[in-house]
Length: 386
Image (cartoon, rainbow, N blue to C red):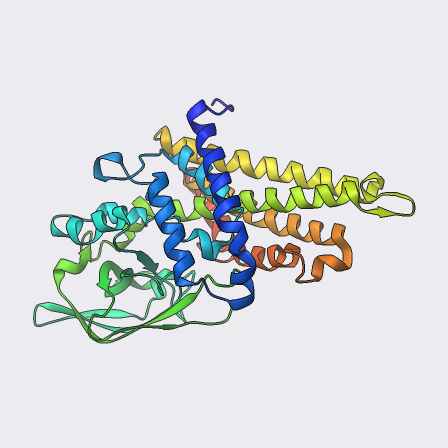
């Protein structure tokens, strides 16, 4: 593994970081105070991303994407992590799972998403089924050649802007020695489909302006043409494509941690107490040393997992480790930064308290820390028959 960046990779880092600092940072206070992204700002960020040539950078060039490999895309998302989640949502990165589209689905969903003509969102979580995907109660049943869907999804990020949603729904049940086991199918559901409602979600302390929505299905009819992948093949689609969401959390956690660290380092070098810079006190300087060590460790762990994917090497455990460590590292780094800033760190005049609040959700979404530990331990023990 080569630890240096190529000229092209460094260009990706520099270009995206400059974009975030120029196009994202100036709007963060507005989003934080209002809890929403003004439509004109969203449209402008999207337009400039398209002009930059980075929209859908995670998709192959042959279908109009940027053609970045996993490592390069991780570098891109690491830099995006420095900015507001609500704003960098419009630096378009459609769901990789759309590569499972076939036939007419490619023209209706995949290609328009890559071109920025349609936006997507992903829906799995339910009020009674978060980490327990097999516990889904949103069901689709056969009726008159269609699927009739009833149930609810919640915590669905980006659905307020989405033209269509990729929804995972229970389509049957098998009896196993360990009890009933749901069969899951992925569906493509257009906004405005009869019986399908996208409703406002809950107020979250993390990532203000990055809304979570509630999806309600009431006798919503979907034809087989809306099935993504195979019927009852939802888990196969997940396993092939959804690893990317865990790497995203890890990379963006690293990017945000570096921004927080840079602020804390600058503050420690300037703030004076007892006649000297607070960075000279061991209580502060040692915190800075621990912060940068953890950030670098998370960075290398994350990039190594993306590199493994590019080498076609098994990476499930490494991705889980990256997501686990980077998200928990971000919590420690933001807390330490707030401590260095003291009372001012808790004031909304500075963004430190926002980073501190935002960090909390990273250990929950896209698989909790507990789920990541389960994945890691399972990968270690299974080869030994345990």
